[in-house]
Length: 343
Image (cartoon, rainbow, N blue to C red; front, side):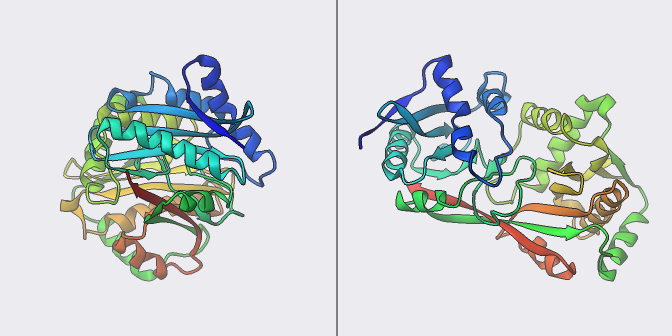
């Protein structure tokens, strides 16, 4: 066996890169959320992320047959770290994995990176982590999915754990604990508090409000990279094209943006994903988290959803992990792992 790796350099090779996963998931129980056409859109120059970052895409071939793919990503905002993503490899192709990562390593070193982390499509603000637990659960919107053997391939190439991202499922018909309802009730009565859904008709103004909230509330979260206006705009348009604007909630206190949450319709009409929930630091400890969760549960229940999947919660997010055990019937259903390796 002699696996070769090439950098994609033509439209035909880009199409091969995007459509290769069809071969991998033909026999899998579930398929990734990202379709080949969506991958092409993400790699397009129209993706505003590439105004700040750059990438190289690689294909591995064995006797003329494509057996793997990988993207290497470099974002100058975090100059010592490179990312890898769009990982797909045929089972038992350790040589393909080794050669793909060798090619990615060489390119990232040229950019100035000292470590490679991932998987991420294409950074930690987007689809992040390798699924290592919960393969029976279908992937939710913008969540990674992969075959179980990918973990073996990654760790066989010398990658070690950097962080785990946890996903929990909670039934919408399960009453919230009294303590959460009590805290949410007090918050709702605060003078000057306004909670409303996203205004699609004034999305340009909403973008700046949400960017301010996210960049302040998420700054200390593991892996968070400050979002530009273009990135928030792209995220909202991309999500809302498949989502429900009423499930994106903003809280203002005395007209100041204070908190934001966004839920997305899931892969069935019975499940939704709570994808974002952030509170600006100066407005924390005022019950806004509880109020957003209470309102989200009420909205989803009224729309017929049976369960909420809260994901991906970093294992270092102690406030959220202290809250989870208070929710009866809440269970851990998925674990994604983010890896690292020195270059």
